[in-house]
Amino acid sequence: MRSNRLESLAKRCVAIAQSVSDVNGFIALLKLSDAFFAEIECRPLLVEGMIAKPKATVDGDGTRKKWKVFVDSEKSGIVTAQLQTESPEHPLPERFRFTVAHELAHTLGFRASEFGVDIERAKRTKESDGDVVSALEAETNRLAPLLLVSDTGIQKLCDEVPGELTLGALLLARSRWAVSRSVLVSRLNLLAVVDDKNLRNRRCLTEVIVGLGEWQSSTSAILAPWPLYISLGNPFVPEFVLRLRSKGSCTLSEIVALDAVRAADKQSLEYVCEVPVGTTQNPKSELVPIRFTFEDTPRKAGQAFLYLVQPAKV
Image (tube, rainbow, N blue to C red; front, side, top):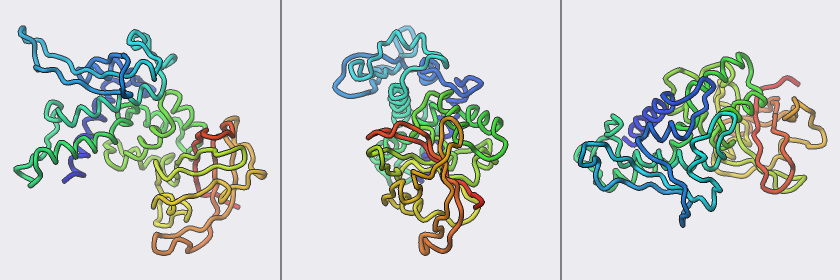
């Protein structure tokens, strides 16, 4: 039942994002908050962000009251007036945008029926009302990327890259959408939950793995176990990805010889090698060639990068 609940909420988030997206997929926060009938206010807080519910749903004159999304002005460095001037050319910071989307998604846990989402209640499921609300809150935490990247944006990416996905195309899309690397990968991953336009089966989003890494020093980096977008045409998955998917660890040097990488374009590097692939039960069934392309970011501790894994010929 909970998977159905998440799908219902996800579909509504996708519809909201579509309604306020521009032709490239950019979503302005003011338009997004208006779609939620909410106001964003930046002020000093003890937390990064929070929501406030109106005491009454309407004023005495029948005017609908708005929810409030508060964001810590001291941590974000943003003042409320800056929301008015946000544009695709001058987006607000990625972290601020995610905080707002997160809080807006969070309100769905309290007002799902307001958005036409039919949530099975306790009397039909043996869950208490408290259990339902708690589950909704946990599930809506996953939905923020759906409010920051529209189907329109992903479809434009697919239209511009009719063949094999490139890291350059992903980085351009990330810039257009004004989202973090993590949000980008998470949004692709959520196509497994809701994908009415069948975007997951477009050529550029098949036979590819998209993930995140982080430099630990100038010579070492680790690959993050989450988020991971995996779209392969067979059950065999690279062994290092199986490890990551089970929350294991993997270093970049286990796959890539850094002194032998070559430039893929101005923003990325690539390395072709053979890696073991298999299933969870037999993770090293055979060796297959892959092309590992990763973002050429500064090699300093804490610096993140995107990477792609695709089939290759050696």
